[in-house]
Length: 323
Image (tube, rainbow, N blue to C red; front, side, top):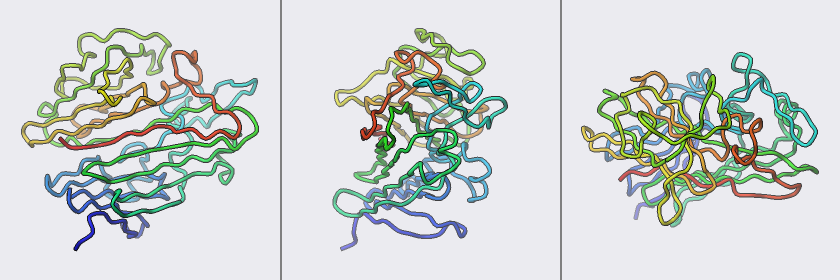
């Protein structure tokens, strides 16, 4: 009898990748560990639909690492001047977006494959980064840490679970996010987005000011609206959750008979929604543990974590599923 779940090591135009396969659900996920640990494809055979905004080649992913699949962000979002102060130490991140820093330190870091599994509990791969093995990372963020991300296909859904261990001898500030690009091809007015969130962060020049406002007008997505109605680049909080604690974004197309959910557990109190220019063909629902520029905001607002020396903590779990 054919095994339901498989893990395959293969090639993508000469780039070593890992495939996770759920035969029964007809789902295949493809991960490029060396290219920032990006899970760049999630294909549904029954729907003949690529669920993620996938690059055409490894070269395209290298050239635009923030634009495809699932970029891994630590910390997420932009940081003013690439600078913040914590514990009496001033940190300077590389200014990779004009005069600011964008999307964290592990975005293009090669990740190591730490574990693989295929069995009754699904098809899974765990990748990790040990910061002390990366000079550029330590130069900007002088803490030894071990960050691990597990991707698992199980019961027709993709689950992502992360954890981090502070291996340094002092407290470490922390925040993480996942830039999940969902594919929404064709007419953007034929796709609808819904998010149960009652408040949003006020933004100034794209940075949260620290103020949190009630949603209203075009910002209110609780009843859903067409993706193509207006561009999205907004930060939401005060989230509706189900009985198990999941919040989530729904992307639906009646025309295609598709309803895609990106959902996150209670360790993610913030969603960023991003469309780029209307009509580019994607919606990016991004679960964050911390507000963008959070290291420069009051902790009560930003939700910045402080991880004690030697402590290992779960970052959280998010998932993509089809209704």
